[in-house]
Image 1 (spheres, rainbow, N blue to C red):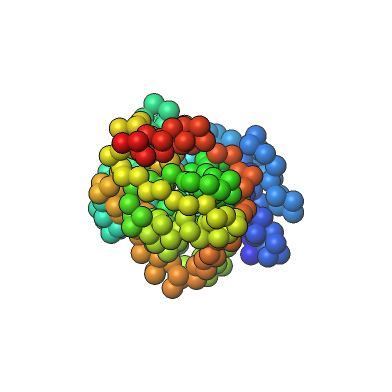
Image 2 (cartoon, rainbow, N blue to C red; image 1 turned 120 degrees about the vertical axis):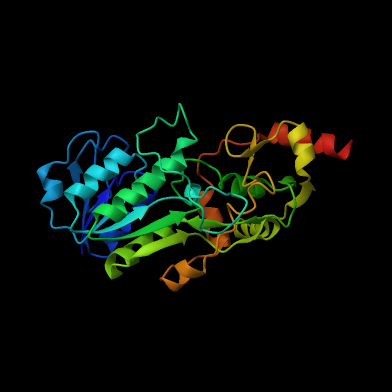
Length: 315
């Protein structure tokens, strides 16, 4: 297989390129190269995607192209240059307009212009819809995969890594919301391996790229098992956490994986069945957890967690 990875220096695109090399494929990574080096064994093809595609992109004779981009103009130009290849486009479950439902409809309205997410972060899902449409309209054949929360080594967000690191410290752990809230994650290595399967098989269609949905209490128990933790959980209701100023989902002062309910009941509860039938293989969360102990984390600090727990017990 001769494969073009658009990117190849960070997280998912880098993992795709690395696994492609490990399979013995001819892998080229087209990118600026400013975010890091491409994997050993892959070829770096310099390309600032704000510029026109260089001849090497159009003349590469690619069997498949893998793209994770979010800017519609970049996807349109890349598809135009490589239309004969089989495209695997990595989209997101954020294309769905109704986060309360796990159904794959309706989609957001497409945002066809390139929008700076620092100015308008809400444009992300709509831009991905426009990217999907560009791929479907321009590529000879294509498959769109829509991941939920991607986790594992190399994750720059820390949205999952908080939990292995917190549970490894042991003690009383502040657990958010209801233990029955459904969540799901997918290990970046499993997603990358599946993307290569889809490329090799020239699979077509649209698939949610997600792990098995489970109650958050079960997921955290598996994380604890994976890091050898004997921590205990104190489940604190959403209303109290919000009164205490704890933030949802990610970032400073947050409890990752915690989402407003029922508004986001469907975001981390998509059906993994079609992806599994199409060749996705998932590792247990307990195997992912220890590989996240060195990942960067920005979340609720230990001191702030202790304050919230103390307030809960004193209520």
